[in-house]
Image (cartoon, rainbow, N blue to C red; front, side, top):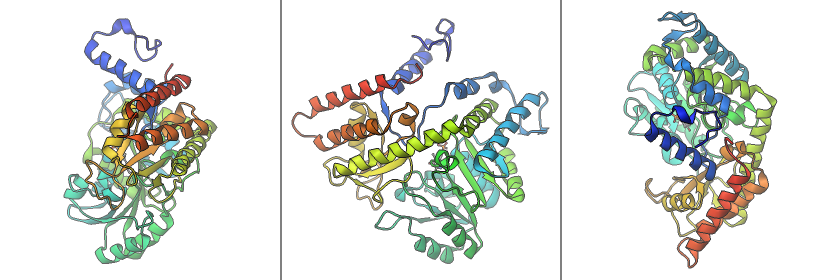
Length: 421
Ligand SMILES: *Cc1c(COP(=O)(O)O)cnc(C)c1O
């Protein structure tokens, strides 16, 4: 096995079981068309920082105010990460310690609400995230979530959000989604929040990379507080961030992240975040984000040319939700069949889905990862053709042969656009 001397040296591996799985996962990533909308491929430099010796250091607290000695270099990387992310999103304060998007969101809840408080969030079945009030999560169990959603046109029903806000007087109105392909009107959300004295909290976990490139609306000027992941369209290490322009909220967020919901920060991840934010500040990242959007639109429109429906009718970001109700295949089977054909995506509920979440009537697709591998619009159209061919021929005669042809095409595309070579 060769990792080109980069990830690790083969002759130093003393744990062959784990490293065999890593090697196989590398091959899977290299040989599969990755359309999972929340995934991306971090750069070698990001991974080098994330795999570095900073994993050894405890640095509870914040730069200049640590609970341990020996933190001078921790302060340097954390300050770099903070400065860069503030520049990226044009905001005044940032917390770069959340271990993940869910931890970032929990910190915001912990900072601004008490158990039992009411908040508004987009329903999971409507495109929202689990942490926006779904029953099995802390957000759903320790607070009182009121869900809003989309209308029959697939667009957020802002009038209904206003009505629910008036009726329930929430502490927080949470905007943001995991499977919503349209621009969100953050100004409108702020007006609604102001009309009932609620905080506006916006979670841009999915859209962050497009936001920094100016291709998706920035919530910074409207929201009291913003959270994001760093590993989706932002293309950094797995992790979370919280941003705000209010010093008072920033203070609350800092105490909520540590010691509120986390212990020691993962300093290797913070170093990797700093590297990723540096990458995102470069002009090349804007070019990348522009291509993500072009590719996402090209793939979505090609599926529509084949007669497939998209939830809300189009995409204005890196992802689309494809409605499969016209076809004789559900989301779960589509996910499995496409994977066998060399294309990875995930089943996804569509608004007003008649099937249970274990089956679903949709799939979600995204362009962020394969754009990192330099595929362009013609390749994304080809991927759409390949997907359509699997989805529309499922169960028909000659299907297995067709599926293996698509698998061969997928492999060829992957070889033409190598990853980590
Ligand atoms: C992915 C996502 C999260 C959670 O991020 P994790 O890092 O998986 O915890 C939170 N909010 C939204 C909207 C997301 O899409």
